[in-house]
Length: 596
Image (tube, rainbow, N blue to C red):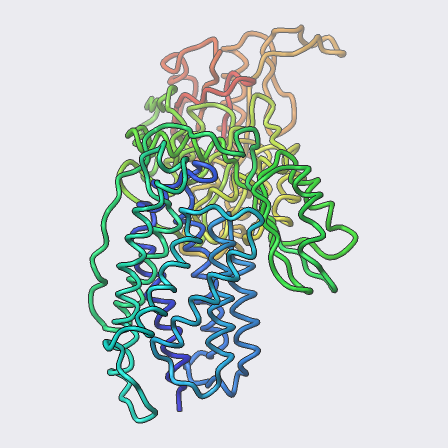
């Protein structure tokens, strides 16, 4: 027999998650405190999703396990730990503590019927735990909203006749409606609290906005009411996005929002706050003696993790670049995030067809590393996404056409581990394949993959043109392992070439600095005049090799200083090989080539 209270708890979480998902971007657009990085809705959603996944695991595939079969303590510890480990950002960590406090109160009363009295007690315990987790609680935020919603329920129970007395024989539908009615009144109180937020917090008042986390809480509870009633959620006010201003906040000088878990023994959250505050601000350390979740804003994520090296194991490291998040949020709210290509494949014309990518494409919210907005359209979370390290506006646009998010690696394609971690964070997917596109990036990418709290696989792409050719094999509904395998197989069918100006005189006397040098794979095959060298490399690629045979298509990606126009290249290869000519915009190579 299914335990109705556990099923109800799962339904409540699912309802809260569904409603928050539906208005997630609205919450993101309100986010200005403590940093205007536009991710509060995302962070709260991820926390709730982790709780729902854990409940499903506990209840089993047929949802038949009861509270007593699982164990009350196991439920509390598992749900609290899932919320803790799934939390990101200030809002996610605080929400995890609200969930922990509520779960502790609900399960601490075995046999007691869930009614308005117990719901009020649970929400009050949740607010107390959340307040205690923050060193300097700010009023006007989600903390205030949670406390005032709890106060409303407790006051109603004490002074109102509208809360019916329930007993063991009460039908489930009657019990659900009683809980829903109490929560609906709490939602109204929460809305009032949200509206008062700017009176309490100057950052909100200056930006002309309400608190994103507090508003997110009211959305969640409205979703719970809808789940209990099997109906539409109660109406909530909509709030205009924040003005594009940058209110003074404590993280104006720090770049990375850093989150990670620590597992060990005899851990004391308070011991680590002071050393972390020497590295940054917005420090939160919550959890218990065996598991901690750490959040801070810092320029040195590596130094933050080193503080815990001697006391436990650091995992689930998540690093978000707040400066870029703020830029993306501003672009989105001013209508500047509309240049993302929505997954269309690049056009492949007839032999000699010239297809020019836009050289001046701006790196929009979605295009840079996967922020969940394409113009006014919200981009859904997918199972597996991809991140490519690129250099060149045209190449970045081509990867985006294939649904691959990009990280600007600079002229030398040399991002740091923490640049990669921040970019992995921004990919709007549960799992990520990284295309390093340079042998020099592979080690940093593998280190980032080990540290990330997402499932990450690094594909062995050692050039941008190979990565682009292989990226066609990606599919967002496959697992990261399946996509990584598909990329590896695609790479076996690609031969690469390049033509670049020589950086120095050749020791063997074949060419001088500034001459064109042509490569197939890593072997120098031609040199001298740019046009003659390019023609030689194209013909070598068109001839194929013993294993792959002759190619059907050769892509030519022109660099920013290429000495020939695309129209001058169209006739360099005769026969049945198709040329695809595009502007890559890369700084170091005149032409990058890939034969498929």
